[in-house]
Structure formats: structure tokens, C-alpha cells
Image 1 (cartoon, helix red, strand yellow):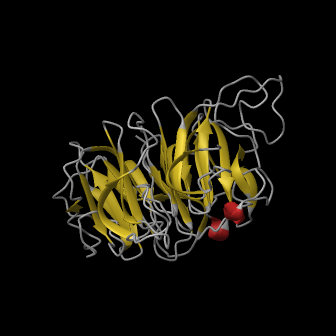
Image 2: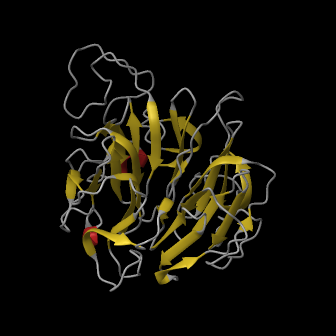
Amino acid sequence: MRQFKARKRTWTPAFLGGATLVGASLAGCVGTSTGVPEGAMPGQGNQTVIRFDEVVAGSTHGCALVNGGRAVCWGMGGDVGDGTQIERATPVRVQGPQTFAMLDLDSYTCGVTTNQRAWCWGTNTEGRLGDGTAEYRGLPTSVLTNVQFTRITTGAIHTCAISTDREMYCWGSNRFNQLGVRPDTLSLVPVRVAVGRTFATVDAGGLHTCGIADTGDTYCWGADYGANLVRIDGSVRFVSLTLGGQHACGLTSAGEAFCFGSNTEGQLGDGTFVSSPLTGPPVPVQTDLRFVGLSAGEFHTCGVTAEGAAWCWGRDDLGQLGDGDPPPGAAPDPSRKPLPTKVLTQNTFMRFATISSGRFISCSTTPDRRAFCWGFGTGSASKAFSTRPVELGS
């Protein structure tokens, strides 16, 4: 189950007021010619139906993997990997020959390819792309290392990844010790973290990072933690972990959800707005539901159950909880909800397989590999804002 976490930068798409559709519609898209036009969606023009392997929500944009690992993105110009500064209302193809096994987004994008190499694009402040420079990259650029990776995660201004031998590497800004190394200076290329310790998974939050070590212990470092790895209260053992801007949530082997950290918007899901210590103990999400995946956005969290239902909690000022409530100002509706609320699907038979929370949007894929988003900047030209799921690219 793909996990996802916080996004940090405000995104206000110009197309929210209604702009010309850019890019191909994905709903039932089948091409008729033999070539794939420059910038076109994989599948457009080559008689291939588009199927989504993964969809990921960010702070400035969204991306998806389609038809075996080709990347497509939509959103703020300069972040979508097509080499232009044009804002994209619907997904366009990321330029380059790479096929990806996974992507992760903040206000930039990084991914691990099917041959286990790391590539990034977009804003490169303080070297977060890891290519040895701090220059903006409108197209995918290779991370400057010979290390092969299995996972990668993007923070606000830093990036971390786990190598094939389960070692941790980070790069970018280290002003808040989020690289987990001393001194607190940036690194334009990957540096090894926690020498002698190996990790099963990692996730980067706003200005901090957390990982689950192979011992099963959860460690965090960065803002409010310092450069040393801080062990989170071990009363709850996680099998997966997802970070928001200033909160984190994890799943146990039984599918129980626990969270810790900031709770100003109800993002911990415990029915309160009281924050918990950053070092734990984690507080239980107040529900009998059992989840197979969690994703922490900037100020909200979403989960998907084994039955395929999606539930979200926390900030709901722009429909990112997907419960169908009217938009702000249209009717009385709390802008923050501290308990899980069910995502309102198009019909009672719709089921979700994955979940991804960004800053203003949440996205999910279905078992038949369709993709849906809700909130602000949904990737749909017909409905860029929606309080319930709309099909990506429609």
C-alpha cells in the first residue's frame, strides 16, 4: 500500500475559475494513431487504454504513474516535468525515457525508476534535487550518486531515500537538522544517515524526517528533534509510517491507526484539537476501523480500509476530506473535523485501493486502476474543485 505524507507550499491554480483544458482527458482515453505526440499522455495516439498504477498528491501539483511506470503530472507551471512554465489543468506527460517504480511530491518531485535510480525535477532550493546544484530543473535530472534506491521521500526542502541495502541517505537543506547529520549545512548530493543502522521505510515531513528501523523502532530527526535520531515511544509498534507538516501517523500490523504531533486541525483523529508530544506516545485514532493504508497531508490525514472505503480527518477548508459537504461559505460546515469522516463516493459500489493526501487535495486509485481526486486542484478540467471524488483528467 502506497503511503504518502505532507505537502507544504500554497497552490492556487489559475484554472480554478475555469480555463482552457490542457492535455488529454484520461477518462476512457483510447488513441487511434501510431505515434505518441510530444507532451501527450502515454496511451494517447497509440490505442492503449490508460490505467493508473499510482496517484500522488503534492502541495503545488499532482502526479501519477500510468501504463507500467510512465509519469504524468498536473498543476503549477514548472513543477510538472514537461519543461515548460505552463500551468496544467489535467495531466501531461513528464518528458524523458524514464519509467518509475514510485514517485513522491512536495513542491517538487522525486522518483525511483524501475532500474532503482533516483531522479528529481522542479524547484531546487538548497539542493533538494540532489544533482550537485541548486538550479531549477524543468525536466527530470539524475540524483548525483551511484547508490541504487528502493524508496524516496520529499520534504519541504530536503529529500531522503533508502538504498537497496537498506541504508538511509538524505540531501538538501539541513538548517533544521533534517538530514540527520552534522554540521547543519546543506548537501547538494546524498549523504549517509545513521551509519550502522538500517531501515525498512522512511518519510519526510515539513522540516523533519522519520523512519522505521529494521529493529521495528521508529526514529525521528530534524525540527524539534535535533540532528540525533530520537526514538519514538515504543508502546506502539508500526509497520508503516506517514508524515504531515508537523504530525505523523502509523499503522500497526492489526491495521490500527495511531498519530502523534500537532493536532491544531484535528489531524490526529482522536476527537480533540490537543497536540501530543512529538516523541509520543502516539494516540489512537478514535475509530473501530482497520486500515490497510494511511496518508498524512499538510493538515489532514486519510486512510483506506480493507473493504475499500476511504476515510479522512483534519482540515476540510477546501474539500480535502471528500465527504461531500458544501464548500466554505455555502452552508454551515466545520472547516476542521477531528474524527474520521467517510469519503462520499459516486456510488455505493466504488472501492479504493490506495490513498494519497496533499496540501489541498487527496487522491486515490481503484482496484480497476482508475484514479480519483477531491479537494482543490483535482486534475479534472471540468471540476478543479470538488468536495467529493472526481475522476482524474475528466
